[in-house]
Image (cartoon, rainbow, N blue to C red; front, side, top):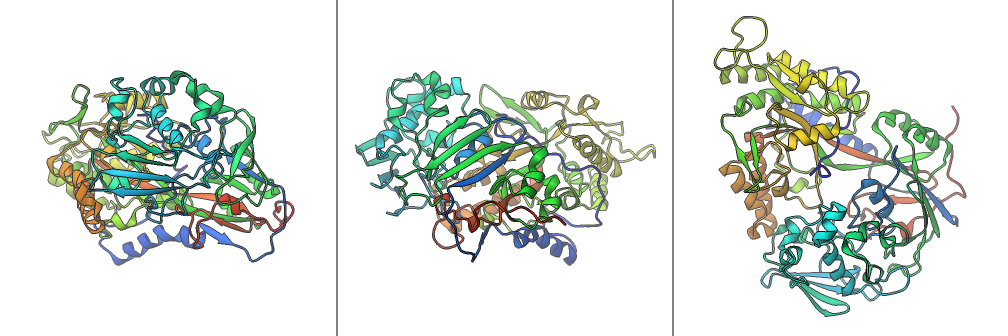
Length: 612
């Protein structure tokens, strides 16, 4: 469960509150609406996700790429079996690409141009794969249905799952017929994988749902079956096939590895779109303390993972282009409203829990100024989360819902209505029974700004008359935090956490009744029904799906089991000698699909910044 959450990033060293008022339905003033529009679009307008230069390309042999990290990479080099986001940085644009997506992040269907032609038949409850004959591994062997079947047999195997601590065998992927029986050891094969020949197969599903169209039921990348022959399932995670010499069907393959530090890639001569224009990519870990100096010196062509705190310095550099895109995670405050029933594998909501009063939760939401946090301490790279939905799917979002914006007077009014009154005149409200009441807040330690962040929250809740203290009077280390939150420690009333969104918009696995990640432990009849509608077969229809998501969004934001805080933007630093770059999700900003095989440069070496 811990790997789904994201460590809460530090937000600030101090906070200047902005004067703003509003509500969850868009704000009470036009000025609030105008600011909201600026928050959402300013960074994207200034630094789009793509660029293209008119300068003439020159021939070079090597492109240099850095990944900012203060930790070494783990080195599991498969685009589906990896467990570390740094490993994914190394592979995503060099070795991956089996299933391209469109602008809505859905699988591209029925195309002879994709590596694997995907056809969905809702009536038959089948998905047919037809492998492009030009889709080959970096040793020249064609990708076959044996590779696809072996991928499923690995990630659904219980010995592999236990030894690798993998979370890939999720509820969505259990939709494949026979895969649960295989996982439980009741079958040697997955009956729902019907192989027709080396290039064609059908996957039989229990039900076709919207997740099918987003690829949520399937393995997103593949392994080479021959490489894994004879390797015991409980040894795969440590095998050379994953860690030293994995084959690739992407534009590049691994030539050399300096463990934890550097990977050298060479052009895949068998790449289905044609051999890459640049023959070699050197990709290495860059300590965060060296990132700005490396940018100034023009040491790299592309730098992933540059931190927000150096963004003002990065903006001043004249030798780089900045590209941005929405990040796929959300910070949120989760109220403890029940517990997890391990026997039934579901949440059980307690209507007598301390945080159950909906006006109490809404009041606490209105006390926080997330606009100020995003502007002043993320330099515009974070905006107030409008709702619990992923920002990657704007068509599913109700535009009238605009998040909980700071409104201190409204917060106080809600507490008054809920019966939390200051009985003795000391500025702190008593409980509904007139007795003193204290609320406990859990938050992770880490970095120089976690402590000021926690104090800001406590200060804001005190300003509306609530006595809130940190659990144990301190920040919790990451393991202690997760252990206690997941165990429903009664000492915790609410916490600050973050969660990652996938490429599938469904949220049953995040906030559903049977979701372990539902740390608020909240469920209700109306919320369950609204959630179920979003993943029903009826929701395959685009219009119906949008209606269902908007209804789910409205119910969730009204019942408010969690308070969405921030959506963030990622930024990428690209040296100006790079001729063209596309960082959109579908990589189709220029019409046809862009990938790293098309990278070109306009100078022999990366450009250094001019000294001013």
